[in-house]
Length: 463
Image (cartoon, rainbow, N blue to C red; front, side, top):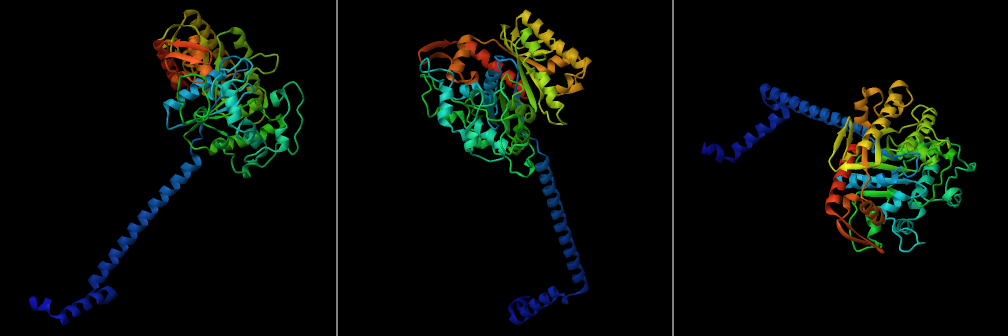
């Protein structure tokens, strides 16, 4: 054995036999074994490639069919119903509860209340001065970066930048005038081939309120932080969109929302002018409608009968009849606003889930309104088409539970401090607060109860 290992000639001969075997010069059994090994290797390679191909196709399919970002529009044709205030509180609360979610608030309101509250508040350094929030938005952004720029991009297909013609807006508050005929814009027939265009990037028109607030005097000695995942597309009183531009703008806004990453939530605030071009744009692009509603009978009736032609459900019906699939927004939640409360404990009142316990008179009024809507919902096909779950709701109690919630009439001190500071209730500190010449003390228990209620309402709306 030592001789075999020790002789170079014999070792070389053994190596040569192995080389001949690898070249096919071995025995028949060796060659069969090698062929079988080759077939098994090929089979393993084929199986790996097959599963890799399947996974690749699954990813492509998921990419094509992925869910579009959640979209909400806050609407009511009654001014002062709480659209902007509730949108402000819920946008901040949602951003705080879901730090991995990017929350984008788009302000389609001539009055810019949502922008004002998010960008510094409604306080004024002097009587005739602009509010801090409005001034901050105006100085911290350009037209190209605000709603003005977004609307022109949606109307024309330009990714950014306003032409000289676009800058010369006309009408009420520099935008659409509901009291005068529209002046047609050149080359705006509503027939542009929007499918061939790259989607408008909504993020280009959004700013973080927290970034703006770091650059200004907040008007007091109290510091707070807005969530860094909260964004706003600011409005500064100009909404340059004409009726004939709406069809192309709707298609482009839908494409822009679809192009956002899936972790984005879009919330759109609107005015009481439900038939305005920007309102139609919002109703045809967002999918879930949040309806803030007072428990006043006149305000309730105005949803269905409005001499100005802005009755919300009439407008929705008109948009629905324009073409199949044109109207996208359907009622997702009715939020009774400024409800008198009896206790701070959550309650269920024959189906109506509330984050507080309301006064008995308010309970009866809310039930009456909900039941009137359900009776029309069930008896005719007039309302059922405009609610998210349509005919799936089978009883009055189910209808109340699915669609109705509320926000109580908050302490004037807390609510005023929140608006003046531009600090949402979810982030508002307790104790002494000084805002310009105004000072007040916020009770910790009262504030905690309100914060809990806002959190419950947030879960109800965005669940």
